[in-house]
Length: 251
Image 1 (cartoon, one colour):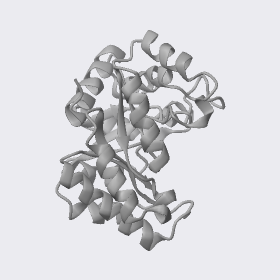
Image 2 (image 1 turned 30 degrees about the vertical axis):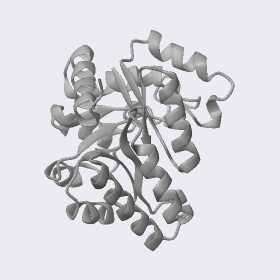
Image 3 (image 1 turned 30 degrees about the horizontal axis):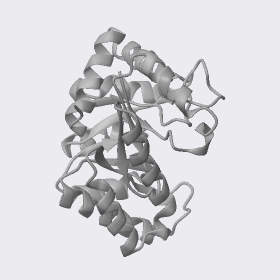
């Protein structure tokens, strides 16, 4: 399996990061994509990827922190993104749920980072929370690919996400008892466009819901997605890992 979205550099892992990584290795994970959320965490993601052979990095600024982005920040992201272990720009996008940065600023920074991904020929990791229409409108004018991480746009927008050439990643809430809509999405995504993730330390799946998430728990996401699709977990794990390798160019 591959955990296609993690935040192992976050402070929730400061006390036992090495043990968490070792548990992921023991659980059989082939790779982890550790995703930046601002400039500092993007630097940390690259440093972590340098430390472990099966960890890769994405660099970018989350919409929450769009208000912190300057030309100098974009220049440093550009330099970080040229590292051999950086395989994507992200996570980037729009968040109209918390609105921690003004929406016009979010949209401009999203466009700037899409341009950076084009310049460097990298896929993107999209954060889209209650901003589906504006995210899709922006991506219609962009010639590239990537993944909608922790997909939340529902079946009604899935066809357009697929038409744009994007992948869809499913996270821990698919295991929740009332997550019928998300399980319907997990069943509907074409297998060749499907990824699984933890988004750790957040979105912890059952049976660990309410506790800190970690990459080893991606198996519970894969199990729930496989059940929703009526297929063997091993086949689902293999397919989603192959998809992650293809999208991100993992060795």
